[in-house]
Length: 265
Ligand code: UDP
Image 1: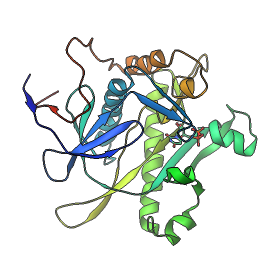
Image 2: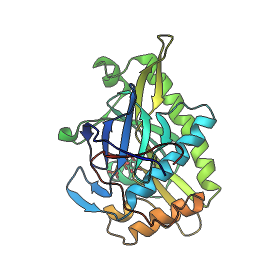
Image 3: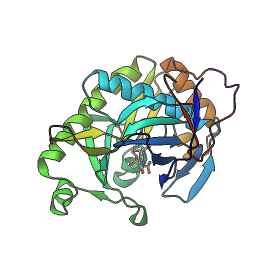
């Protein structure tokens, strides 16, 4: 393995990931941490190995989405915890797609968790930790200029395509895709055209996945609700996807942007 040591500039640290300057202009390195938070940062913890699993799971799902023509920021995985991504201008909206009632929807409207929705529902939340990511409508988004109407239309259509595709993919491995959160960003292509592409990650951190037979939760709700076997659930999702990372014998990737695997990871 060819390893280059060079300290990269840390650009942003979030709750579960760190972004470093990428090796080429227009790229970033996304590092996946084991840190977990819930309830707007009130609950904090670590899920051992989560970063490694989410890096793999997100790589797998984003690659599949790319293959069906959903543009994503994913370029390639660099090593156990890092992936090379396209730099985007993040649209400050969390897009939640729901198929089954759970979480905040169950609480807000008093509908029992597990109720199957008559059709998929798309919701928008304004990305702002201080405000606790308040729910907003398309009116707020366009009025405040977070995205324009055609962009929102594109976001909706991409989100629903992702939902259709991922629902089928997960059903094939005995998991129900209850709901999930997506983030989108803008990129400017060489021809000067702006495009909306899928960003962030897709993993059990931001999806609700229930076992089809037992309805057992296989996602971050195990952490949120102290259900135990959190690592095991993430591992099981990876295993069913057929991407359980090989046993790790070498050292883990340090969180200082100093390691990068050249070539195919
Ligand atoms: N979600 C997320 N980040 C957030 C809020 C929600 O990834 O900041 C995901 C969450 O994992 C779930 C879906 O979006 O799959 C819907 O979450 P919900 O609105 O029910 O909120 P929660 O119950 O997570 O507070």
